[in-house]
Image (cartoon, rainbow, N blue to C red; front, side, top):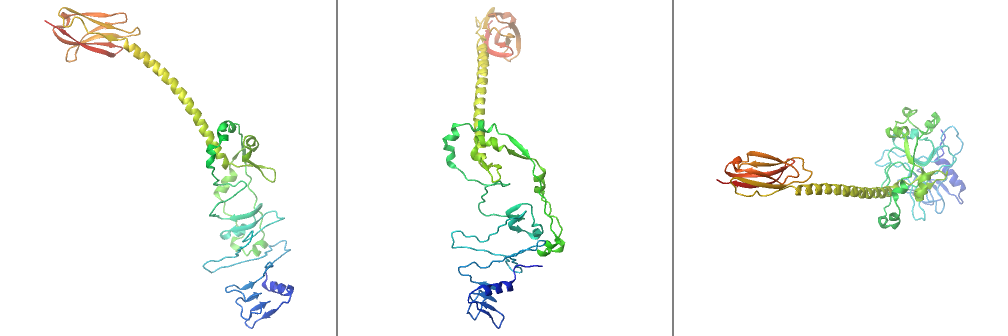
Length: 393
């Protein structure tokens, strides 16, 4: 197996290329290059005594530190640098740090001229066995990813993003001058399917070069339940061309000419549209309520007017002995009416049917006998009024 990073070759290359090179191998096996320090803190030290806890130390000064290059090996895997750490409270394979610069980059990775791959690849557990993934990515992560802080994405990103707020937008006259609802009403919805990418084949040579355990070779990654659903479902999107006509600021054009939509900033427009619709509904409901009120008031007034025409008057004479007259008035639309006479216990004694056009009825004292009685005008089953009359001896 070919390994690019061989310490012995690096040391020889550095010692041969440096001017005034001084290579010293101390009695304890430590190697000093271009340094006069007799006590080394690192077993291999270049331009300095080294640093405790580090096997190799190099003070490159104003130059770059190391440049490692591998070529060939078309059927295997070329590894420029391999860092491995284990059996510790914290193990870090590769650490990069930068500072005191206009632009500081702790760790840089890039790819070019590749069918698929990632500039930076991160995997959990045995995810390294599946590191060949369709497409090219600046970063690819096999496993959960946690970010503490903000995420900025210029292109589409499945998931949930938090965007900036604009507290002054409520006072923006441009939002009040035009109807958002009318602009959104003409948008078209399109559907599409996502094709699942094929996973490239990994050869045994690649497994060997990556030192992947034999039991893990040839295993397919466990299917992700959400991933399976994503590629099996129909997806929906707005027609970007139509949206661009009304809201050009929500549409972006990618390098390949395809258009993408800033759906997140559409949310305020949708809220505004809902508010406009609610305002229209309130107006319509108000008009409907007003019409219903007018109809109800008209019916009530009509009923009240009709009710006010039904009246009962005090009988004359009262008290009486021989005969008395009970006068009343009825509305023209009365269907059923009567003068009902009760004793003081409420027992009905006599019922005299009356109708529109009649004005009075006569009662003889002999019909009831002496005493106090009640008489009521009942119209359409409703008691209009009740009065008392007395029959004397």
